[in-house]
Image (cartoon, rainbow, N blue to C red):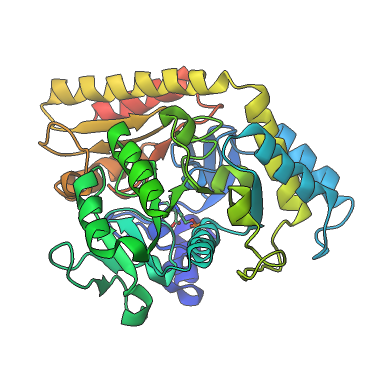
Length: 422
Ligand code: KE4
């Protein structure tokens, strides 16, 4: 079957023909390419069409597709079996590697997705503090856990509304919404709920409203207000962890969260996630402590082998981040030049190797309300144009583009050459 036929058939058996909504290209007038294989920074669809991949499976594929070292590690692990539901040395290797090469993680718990990591970190923070309320930020995405799927009610303090059918009001009554990069909106909530707030969860570099890096003073403000009130500060580094720096966004800002959530890159392309942080908090987790969390596939040895090989490769070649930053700079400058030549109003937000093109007349995009002013129709036109011409960009304005170690100057030149024809 060709791409078209596969997608039509898929719609019969999987809602929207996909296993995650963003893949369905609902905002575009084209069907998603059906991907057959990847190699380095390139993808190939079922019709034999080649693409340069600026999505990277939404972040995990920083080392490129079919990475030799990762594949060798997986094949070697497969010789021993695929899973035992028992302690293995392989999970120790990855857990120890993370705890000894990144900062602020004394202990961690492996899970199987970013959502599992964030929902578990929130539960742990609630168990540790004995409090129920959490603060998240409008435009922040931490996975599909009910407690996160909430739209900001009108006004800061009024009750919020469920962000999706199927989410009962009771699931979100303890979720408070503040504004990203606006510490005053957080102070207002603490003034009202102070001793009730278990945790603040934030993406230190937002990637789900498009890329919007936090302002340092905002994160410093969060750190201070959480310390003052005995609230757990959770950095959701599912996307930014091992991405913008080996030690994540927290190392770029020099700010120490109490808990960090990871996923994507740490699994080397396999389903994986983890949460970790201060020992005295982590020791509250079962079986040591009373906070219950479990998972049949957590710490699967094949996944651990892929993750270990990936992080080792990144950590031992740390200059790759400088390489990706330079490529990102070239791409960002090139896009801005094209926009100037063509009279297109846009803003390009970037943090090292993750970036977003906002089609907007705003001079900058530093908040969710700025991001929402973008011309999403123009973005859809841009995305369709690029994808049709072999440049695989995200199909939504509120996603991030990613560069990896296998991207080349030629890949960037091709992106810019295609964009010039917009
Ligand atoms: P998963 O449960 O999808 O593994 O991770 C949820 C999650 C948590 N935290 C952050 C900061 C995230 O970016 C994500 C997931 N990111 C999306 C991309 N916007 C995954 C793509 C998708 O939903 O298919």
